[in-house]
Length: 507
Image (cartoon, rainbow, N blue to C red; front, side):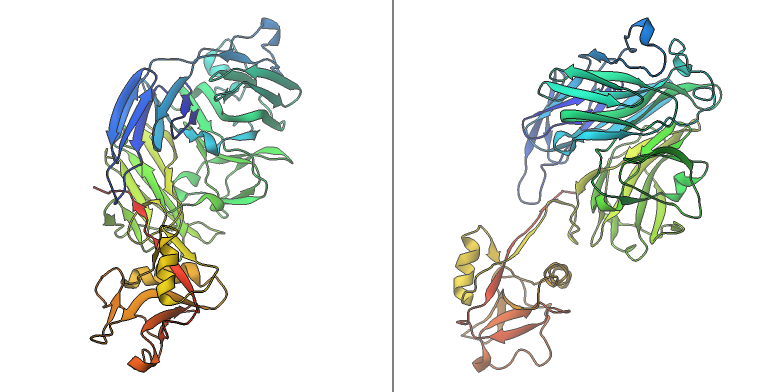
């Protein structure tokens, strides 16, 4: 299951037949239109608009020789059963599979986020499915499978477990292979990037029913990272872990809801396989798709010192019930959601956001789609602001031209929250003075911003500004509070150049 952007192509595994597409090209600068094609269906979306596409392609059962229908299952089944999604601008693609009471969802991963190595999680213990003999001819007793979706070029893919099996895939083909019901370390490696899913076509759930169970897996990481587990999902859950060293199924300990691994970490509870979000992939803005259930939740995990500044659409989060994640610096909360697509964003920090739902006592859901990883107090930044301290020093007037040469402007800090945001970014540099876009009028002696915003919120250092004779321009000191002082406009100082963000338009 892949998503390609910018005139390229996406393959969606056909067991997730309904796809929702959201145009992310919207900004506060201008309006955009995006052309999206799913299979043979084409629609033009306005900025921020969401549309649904229905498909009826189905990924069939594995077609393997009878002699290879027993462990260790050393055969691939290959087909062309994929759905390709194309667009001319950035989009988010969310896939839904619905059949009777069985619902599963998956976020379609952009091809530039795919990898060439994936650790396959161990098979969970599921009463009625994996607790006894595995029988491929009985659907609910059949083995789990790994689904590998190729992109645009011919590709060689190898599955390494008890043995080693390779297959050559053509453009947009999909391969399946059964997974033995044990904790043998298993890995998928490929010549070029692929998408990999871990799935069962009809795992037993509650009330003698079975349904599709699936999770999109992340590429292997090059270092160990930490995964906080949200409290709503922690009870009666287990964690499926697989990395370079081992593969194991671990019951979740509520006294320490933090998992550390360099590989794959998937939470399992009946009806739900949820790929967990590591600290290193926390972000500032997420898109939560519309729910097909009245029992839908947004789950937020954030550092306990960063609970203020969270917004749901245009409204600030009000009076959430926070739960501490024991053994961590994090807390989590869950919010009921309506059927509308929702944007969740943070003014000044990063967080993890999931969407899950419970229908007929069956869970489904996945990590919410990331729109932006850069916090901004003004909203959800589709394109982050540019803040650049130039390497060369100029006079104040020359600094204006130097910034313009890079299609930027000498920064104007006319808002208190903006001042704090910029100071936080810049004070990581070594202490120095930088030009900012404020000057004293030679006619009135009043200070003014280059962008003509009102000169009301200021951050003058103690005793500043001085008299007219002390300077007509202003510098900012990159120390703890980024205070300003007046300075001779002819002095050579490095400027701060700036370009504002493109913000997602929130309705």
